[in-house]
Amino acid sequence: MSSERSEVNDAKEHGHEPDALWTKTVAVAGLGLLGLILLGMVVLYFGLSTFASSRTIQSSNSQWQRVRVGPGVNTNQAAQRERIEAAQEAWLSRYGWIDEEQTIAHIPIDRAMELMAAETICRNALASGSAVEDSP
Image (tube, helix red, strand yellow):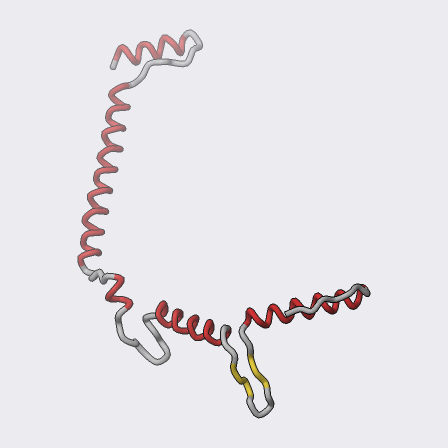
């Protein structure tokens, strides 16, 4: 250690920066940092294990199969969404009455799009003055 200090003093006398490495200081600082990291890891391990043991972990299946919890709350939203989508798909793919007294009906969405496309083609053809073929 004294030889390191003498090298530093010699460098200062000649106007240079010292290039001596204080190995003891570096080693003590490194060991202190390593000890601090290990202490932090131990504290985190015991803290998390204590926290985790106080909670019960449920599987996703048990969470989805729970019954209704309260008014208007459905815990099985995926199944409810599938039922709603199936009902909407059935409504969009069949013929039926909306109001039979006023003769208002609904038709499948695919057929409605075909009719609207044909009507638009006819309207554009009439506006341009060209001949129109019969459409489905």
